[in-house]
Every structure is written in structure tokens, then in C-alpha cells.
Image (cartoon, rainbow, N blue to C red; front, side):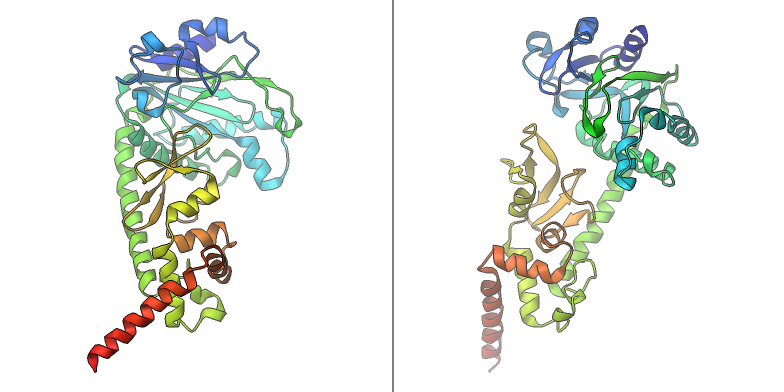
Length: 381
């Protein structure tokens, strides 16, 4: 019990607060730990420095749960390693808790092999894997967008460290600054895989303060520079595809029946990308709704923004870290989205599904291009 409190207090430090939750509501703060952890309930926590939007917690602390925009900064960085799930995805084998703990030494060795990751503060056993924390002596004032970019870059570094050990690849969804993690001392009562409930325990705790937390703003800058380059590259690819659809990633020409590259094919392809609103496809696939700004999406799970948004002018979907959409491409046009999520990656089926779903599709744009061509030739006469 004392180790649990020491762990939480170090993560919280001076101006921070620690919220204890059951995923849906705020149950209390760190001073209520002894009282809450005895409850027969799965518990979670988040440690942060409150923003002006969250500072009214002093008056309304039990009325709502912390969100990303309530956070002004943090003293820690955390990563989730879902070892058991990773192994199950690869081999369909359900490993025991004892087998899972056998990966602890590999995890520690991998982290210590990288100077940025070596000074971790604590490792927790969470039932499905390990939660690793890095703690800072000084607060890092960083908003949710910056934290997301820094987290994506850090997860990329970690994935490279464990590239030869797929079981230790990190959870790519662990990127939001207000992410709830399992509370040490509480119980994980999952019945998945037919395993018994287990208590969330601290398996290692050090006195280290981390350089990683202090470098989060720098990592964010690296991430967005790289992201801008990738998006620019894909914008150009998709722009070129609109003119002449022959890129192998999306290519109608990849299917032999469309190898002619006829005007009708190009017109239909262009019509799919120009006349089908990418937001409609995303909502049909995920069950999300479009936010009031017409750019973001709202999840029905927590009624909060999801990890994807739309470039409205270009009618393109840009991924920002969501497990609900395939990450095969960082940017999706409507044609690419239908192909990947509705047509099993088949170009032939993509055209057929698009025409069946949007019955006007194969006529409107083709006729438009035909009359445009006819008028152009009439003027020449």
C-alpha cells in the first residue's frame, strides 16, 4: 500500500492532482486512495496539472471526469504494453500470467538499451501486460495536441527497439494526455481469455527522474515535421491520381478489366473522390458522428473527438491515431477508403460497391465530362 502511494505521489509532485475514476466518473482524488481502493470495483487514475477549465474541480470535483482539454501539463509519460493480446493476435495462444512475467526482463533490457527510455520510473503489471512510467522532477507544460505528437514519436522509437519482439510492441492508442491507466492496488476483473482476476501491482520502482518527459515538446516538433512531409507526399499522390489513376496503392489499372484507362474509368474514379463526402463513409464505417466544426468526428463511446479528421477542401481523411480505421495509409481519399474498408482491397469491387451505394455515381460525372468534351470541340469548329 505504501509503495502504491509513493508511486502516485511521485507522479503527481507539486502542482499536480491525481484523479481516481471508474472510467465514467470522477470518484475522488489522491487523498481518498485508501477509501476507494477497498471498493469492489475496477479503478483507474490520471495524474496531471489542471488547466483553467479544470481548476473548478475544487468546487465541482465529483461532477465530471477529466478530459484532454482540462490538462495544462504533466509530470509523467506512460506507455501500455499489451503483451498477452500481442501474442494472441500473432499465434492464437493464450499465455499464462507466469509466461507473461517472463517478458519482464526483455522489456527492461530493451528500454535500458535506449538512452531516451532507460531512466523509467516504474513498471506495473496490469493483468494483460505492463504499464511503464517515466517521471519528471519539473512540470512539462504541454497541451493535448503536443502530447499526442510526442507520444506518437516516442511509440515509434519504442517500436523500433522491440521490432524483433512483436510481443513487446506498445499500444499505439496510448497517446492522449488524460488517458486513464489502471490504479495500482486495484483489481483487473477481465474475464477475457478465461483467466482469473488479478491485482494491479508495481513490479519495479526506481528513484529515477526521466529526461524523456522534459523532451516531449522536442519530440512533438520532430513528429509534426515528419507528419507534414508525409501528408504533403500523399496529397501529391492523390492529386496525381485524380488526373491519371495509375498508382498501385489505389490503382484501378491494377485490375486487368480496367487496364484500358478509358475516359469513363477516369471519370468514375474522379467522381468517387470528388462527389462522395469522405465524412459519410467514415461515419458509416465507424458509427461516429461529425462534429459541429465539420472537420472532426465524435465517438459514441465517450462523446469526445476521435483520432481522425478531414481536410474539408480536399475531401481527404487524415489519421491521427485511431484503432477504428486501418493505418495502411496516413491519408485517405474516398476511393482509397472504400477500397480498404468496404471492398477487401480490391479495385474492381471498389467501383462496384461505390456504384451500388451511390446509384447516381456512374452517370453524373461521366455525362459532365462528356458534355465538357463536346462543348470544347464545338468551340474549335
